Length: 283
Length: 283
Image 1: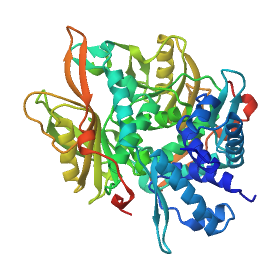
Image 2: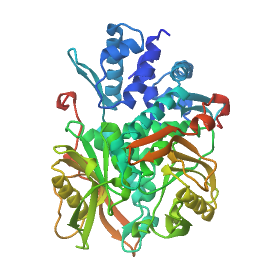
Image 3: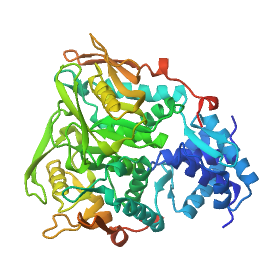
Image 4: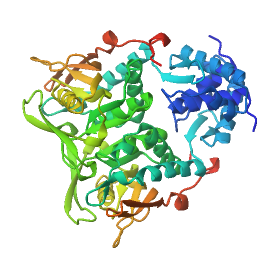
């Protein structure tokens, strides 16, 4: 089949979206569509300009024999604000209040559409960092970790509270959980990471930062480096903050069980994060 | 901005891929692109034909005032075979063998690219079923459940082994785990599901089927219906099989620790599953 430009544009868009952060040689598209490289270049210019107009991604061109194009999913600050607002609206509902001042968030973490957007928010914010893996702790961080990982095209590493026979040999550490100041254990399969990898840590909720600090200690045990910390909801609290350099989408200020009110603002994303342009991407 | 056809095709493809199984009125696209409905119809015909040529999805048109188009992700049997073969090649590596005849699969479940394909395989197989939610058990089924859910645009419900304060009130059941015949517990937040919902159960691994049977019992407690069962790897074994009507992508026949061999074949997908056409989709 000889592909027309209009068909190539549709198919190419689909292909690029399914292969983010991956270098695709122009010759791949040329042979896939039985078209001249010059036609493919023109197609890619249209795709690139449309993605940029929408703010949905960058198409980075790497010149030379080993070159090609790479699709980098991005989000405009305006689109990130929409996601943060959706999240705040959802989280502010009084029926989410649980005894002890906890918030029910499980349904939000179970929404693939919302998780897809959250993943794109953080993948966009860390698109110019070298990242080899996303780390989270079971269970609730997993959907966020996978959503970020899919947009960055890197593997997910899941830390557990207990060791399992199906994980093989594990490395275990003790850490101090934040608010309760209890000693807890974290385990990670030895096969999960290699020395020297750069790791983005993520979780659904952070208060004092004990769990995230535990994951940072695990990184040290594996001789890996911290590439960043992405948190869906951070909670304000009195006293020491164990983690400093993180990005959060939403901040929980106060939960009042008596009056049924939940006070939320935007997280520090809008202070620390921000839009990318092509020049900041490391090829 | 006035959008050209070429730009509309790129942007429309991106939009449809991010909103699977969702009815989009033609007027939405017409106003988004400031174009006549007749032009949008022509665009959609090009998108539809390209998706069909590639076998990557159907674009179903719902006529009438409340109508529009719906993108249904699909996979050809040939593409599913490629996924099954990739999985078998990966799983057959001797270094995956763990003491007790277990297989290390955690890295595969941590690969977002592979999970995306696996999700599409099962979303495609169950695209013509009415499905309201995907259910799995923590921890390893979560990436598969989210991948299927994203392609079907339905929420994920995660069953846990233990109850957590952040889940609110829960329903708990006891079930008999398959091979070991031990009594185990499963809990699910009461808020997770509503009466009458149709639920697709999924997990990474199934032997006798005890865990899946436990999830079926939970569905009964919630007065929900079983819409189907999707398993990444099923394991052959002697004796009773607790679950009958399931779809598997890969079948594990034998694990020989001594010789370091792992015998695998395709799962029953290629017998029970199969391609869709537009006529089988319930609008």
